[in-house]
Length: 114
Length: 109
Image (cartoon, rainbow over all chains, first blue to last red; front, side):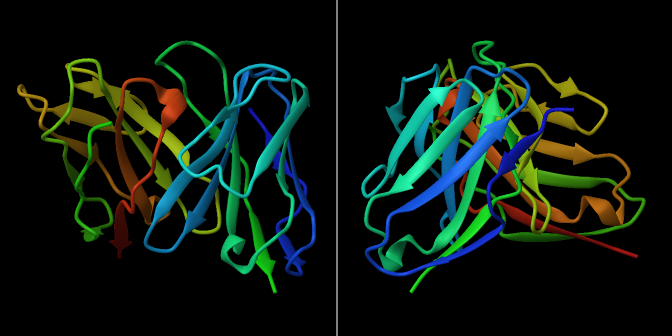
């Protein structure tokens, strides 16, 4: 079974702190994704990566950056956390097979910024 | 990407078929219909996808109308474990999935 793990289930940080959210997948997938999920807004794509050291902006990249130094690991970075970044963050990965691109999700990290 | 419209909530009795509709009247010829679901406190889970033809797998069936402007996800024998939020997504490539608010399906005894 594909396994996508995220470093924390719950995280509490203060405004202005630098926050790292880590995601690891164990299936040698090319593609990795970061989403955030907010009530009434559904899941929104922040960034994705289709190869090591490659990244592309999703729908809401502002306030975030990412890093992919190794194929299995994709990090989401909040340079200076703000209260409006309080959310559930979900990581996903997929094999690159064109349109047939099933995404496998991790359990999520619920981040609270005080 | 085409916008989708789903009812916010539905109920279904256990053992009965759950039919979840999705309207995507602005769908383009190269856009696929994907369905995912999210059980409480878990990440989303892929269910099925299709382009023009109806599709079936071990989880569900997908019926797409001939004009492709709407589709229906069918869970043939719903169980309590199928209680979840179901997302219908229409995109040209699965690498750009954008999830809306979905349909909250409640399966009851």
